[in-house]
Length: 453
Image 1 (tube, rainbow, N blue to C red):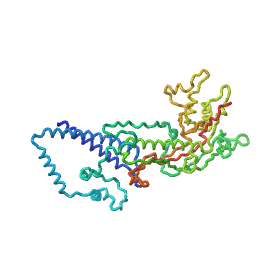
Image 2: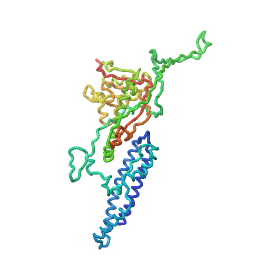
Image 3: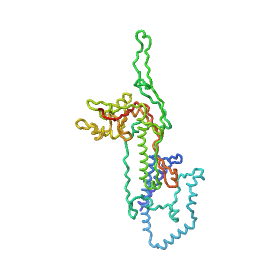
């Protein structure tokens, strides 16, 4: 049994290490306005440690049971049932002779309650007071939970026998994000002030004019004694503001359900974070700038536009891919090299399935063989966040900037309505960001209105 004892000691040491790690993680949680703020990295590490702790405790319990049985089997024979009963009765007599405190009295004497300092430290306990099983074994077992009280509703057998619970099938998630095309900066401000520059190559009123030219050192003829005059260019700037906007949503859940079903808790957290990503893509592209909406790229004044129907018809009519290439030229002519394309999946399907006169695919073969999906050497994001029949081509890396005020995070609280007394909690997902489109002519909105006729 020396090997079992060594294994028990090893598991006890591992258990203490894991518990110390989780305590360190819990101590690093931030508290804002009475709400615990937990990052996704902290949550992942804490949940992993909890799983390890449960597994170690299970193994430890099994080994201790084996050791106990082995010790009992090695005891000398002769102890009668009556002598064992007498010993137990003596222990019970000794227990009942001591002062037995009520649950309420023990709560008032607990460190958790005393930490409130008579209400001067607030009315919310930092942690719940746990009633130990050893203190309640003679009062009906306050912390003993009915085996079937946490079973899900529905046609599930609750009779004797084991129940196998299948894993929840999570829905597929959109992997490509519009955010990936933009440079991102951190900010501590609530409003981003910036200058939007309007053009540099046209003579259109209100836009900048580039008059750069070669200049002689001196004039000729009668003007040879004078130095050459340099031309003046003009730059049109418009002062703009990009307010930081909040994207958020929440879900309610029973505290016991999430404690008993870690997988369900994980799914709720992931779905909330995923919902923020979907909203973020839509706001970056389509936000109208009113109320609490971002001003999206497609609604920014002075971006360029190109219609598919304006393309060439001879010798072969332009395809959607041709329209994207011609839109990229407009960005090039504005002196901004386009760095990405955003397309609806249906429009990307049309482009991928384009065939030549012999019925041979022009693009799909390279993609099917593992080629990176690109259009005219530009990275592609195909997403339902943009309307079918519309595409966006532009210099995402230089024409606009995303600012993260607060990265997406998950927060949990009982302080909502009567949730505290109902044992319910709120799981809130939230992020704050701003978008500044500084050079609108770097972007071209493509309309697949109709094929050139």
